[in-house]
Image (tube, rainbow, N blue to C red):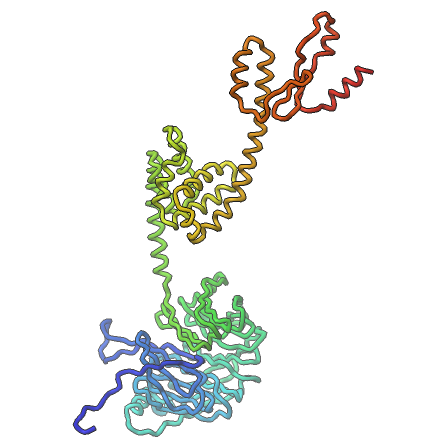
Length: 579
């Protein structure tokens, strides 16, 4: 409208992404020509979202720039190591080269007869500065495309000066790239093409279960890697060693030596097809993503999975690492883009601080135990989660209360009333474990009694986990009480022994009568035909009168041995005497 200022677009926000097919982290791009640590930089990622558009997101704000040019779905993308150019290819049988900063398509490559499923750009920075005839003859940077028509093509890229000039010009004509080499690479669809860090080798993976290595200069076959049982989805060269990592639909990740083309490591752990693999930590570790929605971190030396990250609900088709190695980005069929940060240093620092704190607390605990400050020692033992130390402290507290003539639970109850619900559940968990052993059951039962007598039952019943803990304590408590009842019943044998000792000595009859009146027997003793019945058991005792006129032989026959219950040996001997 005349007389009004024109609006300028500040940022674009995309509300929904379709299935994420591929993504690349774009290297740092300075916002000005100045250099130095204070220069503002922006982290961006390029994403292929199952559409004809390529979306470039700014991490943090998630502002989006859309690259329009393809007429059908984009299947694969790649970014130059300088962060200035992006290659994309798809079902429209063409590859497009984009200038990222301007968002303009500066070159196209046509020649395939089927959809292009993979593309890659050369990795050496110096090649992008080569222009003119040298670049047209293959001396500069190049691009690779692999198609469903099972061919691999190598394209010559013009120099960066020419590409930048086309990006800044208003000419809408697109520069057509010249194909340098073309070869029939596999017998089935090609899923991935990758370039070595020094641009000397090219690797391709296919549904024919093989990975082939090619010389980048003329695409002559260098070797074949055979070992996967299903199609190969990704292959990547190590940035430091002469090895290549591959992943396949057979759920494995394999590491191959480029010297003898042998498999040196196989990593198993995914529950479905492994779709992407990357090197990190200086080539010492691998990161893989699979159709099971998991991302796994592997250590090459130990052949073990160090961590498993579960953030996606569907296949993880895309995985790429930031250049500093501390951040990586994943995208999957669940339309989600996740940014992961390496927190190893923070976790190790927190673990070290926790260890230092534990050492200090343990020293304080030892000091309190040494000076018999059991109440303070109990709180520290519970805070450090040390059940063995807590048992010793509780035993000492109970013993101290008993020695003072106080109730054995007086100190315990004062502590229980100050505990939060979580601490009470912790102590009940200890009691459940202590109660499984008879020698610790006394302390456990006193502690449980102090808790249930100090805290309302309704509050305990509604506490998280407490009813289950009490259900675990109850069976062993019943067993211990049954054992005590059995010991108490067996103690009446002592009563009988003391009774017999009182009958043998007439001088202490009065003392024995006083003990008998105060004793607590199950049944009162009774005399039946010269036999004494105590506690419901028939006991054979000494006869009331002895005939002194009989000789010693007859006296030995009439005297009887005091026994408890019936004895087969005594009865058999008496039968033989009668005969």
